[in-house]
Image 1 (cartoon, rainbow, N blue to C red):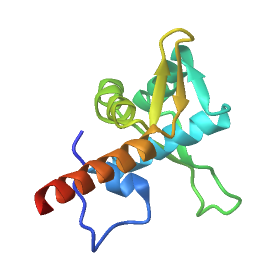
Image 2 (cartoon, rainbow, N blue to C red):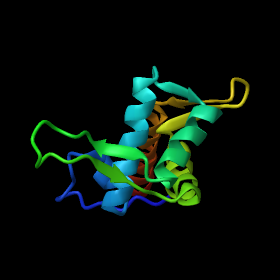
Image 3 (tube, one colour):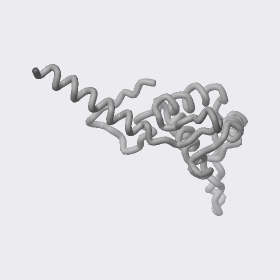
Length: 131
């Protein structure tokens, strides 16, 4: 996945930096929140249930409030597109890790380590050009 950002207009919200559309941002946040609610790690079955609930329009963004004006808000997102545009890119960037042995998805800090590695690679390139 390619991340394009403007250093002068960098959002404070990581999801706005990573995803192209608002709907992708919402689904990405929902996935991470779901994972944190389950101890930061979920199995393949739980991931499939999450994707199916999104696909069927059963995923709730906003709970119904006490006021009649506070209506419940649900979101629908195609299951295949969820795997192609949300989960796979998040795995590729190191935001989510998949353990082949335990068959679980886990929230990861590899994204940060990779960004540091990219920055160091750029510093080495600058240093090489200066010599």
